[in-house]
Amino acid sequence: MRHGHPLAPGDTIVLYTDGLTEARTGPGRDDPYGEDALYAFATDRAPAAPDEVIAALTGLLESFGEGLDDDTALLALGVPVAPPLIGPATSHPS
Image (cartoon, rainbow, N blue to C red; front, side, top):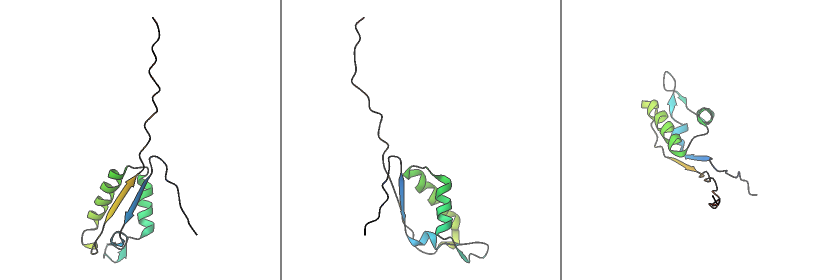
């Protein structure tokens, strides 16, 4: 069975490794960050262009400090927004 979700112009999709969601947080660095927290983080920043998403996630990763002990990789892809269609130029007689 095939499942999918079509992307629309302006949409951004983010791929990440588990090092992001398994980062340890909290006072004792004992709690995993988790997918729910990542979803909330992304939702609070939507809509955003791919470069904005990567910048925000990079800041998040840096905030984990010693809690980040697995490799992480991020990839954000965006669907370009179609430029407005410009009709042919017309000249009006003076």
